[in-house]
Image (tube, rainbow, N blue to C red; front, side, top):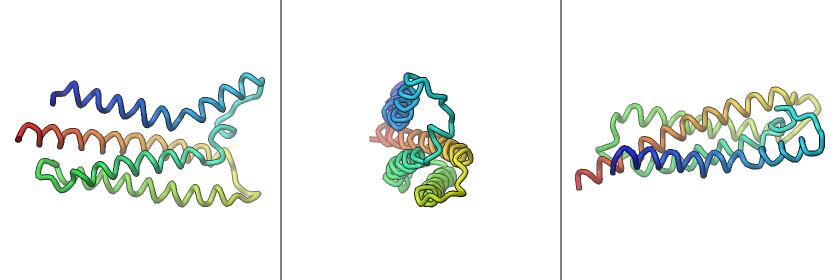
Length: 146
């Protein structure tokens, strides 16, 4: 497999995972502006649903990383473990934060929820794409050896 395949795999992952995870928010945005509503980050992301997308992205990427982590081609192993740990931390933090947000309450600040949720989503995209890139490097190396 060549470099072009790795790039295409990453682009395909971004299009089908990240874009589709973001699609409900795009639809909400379009529905809101078509009704003449003022759309804010708080309105779109203040309920924390994007945290579920973060959990899913990291979970899938972490699963793929575990599949190849024991391979001798998984180099450098320290970086692989670091990215795996980052993904796991994002899953845990996003899960706990979503549980808190979905529990609700009157003192919940939706603007803070929106910002924290978006940051966690951005970090999940970064760590997940690193996981996908690592798995592709391992797969490519193993295919060359066979």
